Length: 340
Image (cartoon, rainbow, N blue to C red):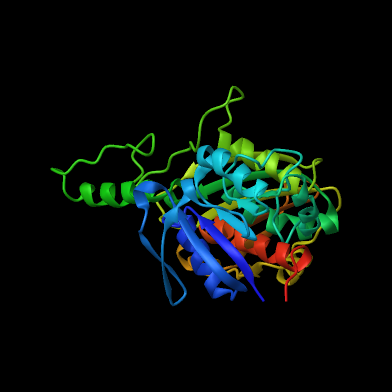
């Protein structure tokens, strides 16, 4: 016996990926509904070998449905998530709307699965930011061993993190560089993204940090440990899919790089590819379509007493969004809403 599942925002990049991953992982589905805004009503989307026609999110009745995976942005979520939750359907939300609400669990299943018990407060579970999700998968097993004091992270985030418009802008600008008569000025991003990098994701705060950087700080504290100090610089790069992160860690206790490598090899959701030779590491192109978070370049930081450096790469549309949401659904089903 399976579940009645809703995917809201099914025509977007993340919504389509949610449907793909539900099918790939053999999630026990008795019935599935693909929802979209009225302008996309009737659009066909794939669920395994099945083709679904999208239904109208605005008029959909969530009564009798078990879980709803939301990928519709904060504004729409504010309207529709409470309706679904009130109807008894547990919402797993990919937007930032509920991440910082103390009553709503923010879950990465490999890191804080026990927090799932808090879903009953509001019938809503939050999915973290894409850049946070992959980082905390790497941090947790190391934190358990040696207690992380401070994290300094620089991200190299792909344009798919900004949605279809971001992908289109990189594609169009790249072509226009080879065709000077076809100028494509920046619209989605603040500056040219083709053959460039932009140290600006989301809005600026009074502190000088961007909201994306603030999210990494706040979410790491909520998911892993509120005592960890985090500072982040988030950069958009001309890569279609796959976020990369250069992470510097300072621990309370000494942790040898070889032991860290062994710990990460055994940790859930992680693949270690770390050879000190040409090509002995993972880049964004190689992670696309994979479930794993890849760790490379593990090495001691000799400038501090208990320091390590590492390189972290993951498919942001998967672990950074859709995969994590499906893993939350699996956790919820196994621990809470058991059927069959």
